[in-house]
Amino acid sequence: MKQKLTDNLSLKIIAVVFSVILWLIAININDPVTQDSYNVTVQLQNLNTLTSAGKYVEVLDGSDSIKVTVRGSRTVLSSFTEKNIVAVADVSKITEDDQVPIDLSTTRITDKIESIKADRQFVQLGVENISKQQIPISVKVQNEPGEGYIFGSASTTQNVVILSGPESVISQVSYAAVEINVDGATSDVNISLPIHLYDKEDKPVDSSKITMSMNEVYTTASVLQTKQLPVICGTTGNLPDGYAMTGQIDCIPEVITVAGRSSQIKNLNSIEIPDAVDITGHDSNVTSTIDIRNYIPEGASLVGGSDSAQINVTVYIEKEATKEFKVAFDRIHTTGGPDGVDIAIDEEDEYLVIELQGLQSILNTVDEESIVGIVDVEKYMKSEKTDELSQGNHAMPVSFTLPDGTKAVREYRVKVKVKNSD
Image 1: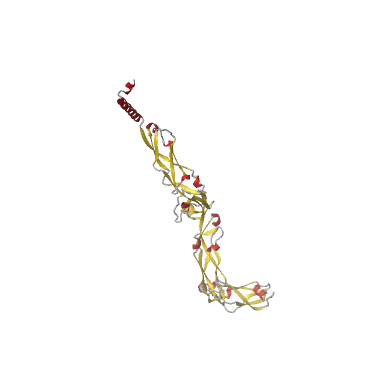
Image 2 (image 1 turned 120 degrees about the horizontal axis):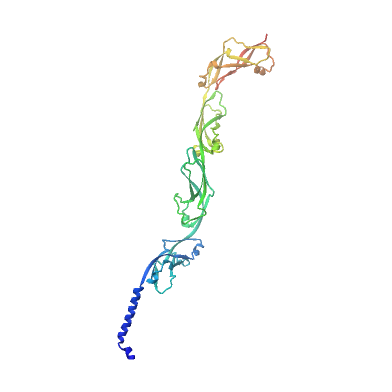
C-alpha cells in the first residue's frame, strides 16, 4: 500500500500543484480582484473643540472632498457604494498647520476587501478668531420721486445690526445699508429690505461667512410735495429827513422752493420777511443778507438746504426833491364848525402855492389838478381850545390829499372868514 502511495510521487505532487493553480485560476476567473473609486465627504468630529474657544473654522480648498479607491473582489464591490465608506477627521487632533488627519474605514467587514485608500491624508482647515461688531444701518435712496415731489428723509425700525464672523472678514465691513427705490413715488414708501454690507470704498462685502442679528429691516422713505413761493421783503427803522425809499426792494432769489406734507403747505402763498432790512440813518441803497430758513413756517422745509438759504435783499434810497404846485382856492374846502355861523375861504388870490417834497420821479407825475385842500374847522377849534368862533378872519391850517410818497414841506394856512348866519 505504501508502495502504491509513493509510486510516481513526483507526478502526483505536480498534479496537486497544478490542481491548486487551476483552482486559483478558476476562482479569479469567476470572482476576480478589482478596484473602484468613490467620491466621499469627510465628516469633521469634535468641531466644538475649536468653536467653543471662539474660533471660526472653515474647510479650505474643498479638502474634505476626497476620492477613495477600494480594492477587493468583484463580488463585494458590485454592491459596494460610497455609503459603505466612513471618512472622519477628528478636529481635536489638529496639527500646528491646521491639518486634521483623515481616518478611513468601511461598514462592510470582509476579507475580500484588500485595501482602502484616499487621494489625500489630511483635511486642511482655516482657523481664526471670531469677531463681533455693531454696525450702524444707513439708507441708500435710488431714483427720484414723481414730478413735484422730492425725497424727504429715510428711517429704519432698527438702526444697528450686530455682525459675527471671522475676524478677517468682519474687519472689511465699514457700514451696513439698505437700498430703497422711490422711483415715481408721490407718497411715502414703506418696505422690508435686505441688509447689505460694504467696505470703506463702498464695495459690497461677501456676507456668506457672516452671521447677522437680522437679515432685513423695515424701512420708510418720506416723499414730500414741493411748492414755489415768492419772497416778500419789508423794512424797519426810519430814514434821515430829506431821503425816501424808491419803493423798489429786490430779493434775490425772488422765489424759493419749499417741501412738506400736502396738508401743511397747501395754504402757503408767500414767504414774508417784514424786517428784512433796517434802513435807520441810511442815505443810500442798503443791502442785507437774510437766512430764509428763519422765516419758513413750521411743517415746511427749504429745498436745497443751506446752499439755497441765503437771500440778498436790497432797498433803494434816494434824496428827496421839492417842487411847487398851485392849488386853486376853489379846490380848498372847509368842513365842520359850530351851528349858526357861515364859514368860507376869504383869499384875494386865485390859488395857493405849496411846495411838495418827495422823490423826483414821483413829483414829476403829480397832477396839480388832483391836489385838494381841506380846512377842518372843528380840529382848529380844538387846537385853540375854544367852543366858539369869533366873527372875522381866522388863519386855519390846510391839509392836502397828496399822492403817496409826497408831503408838504411845511404847514400852510388860509384866511377863513367867520360870520353869523342871517
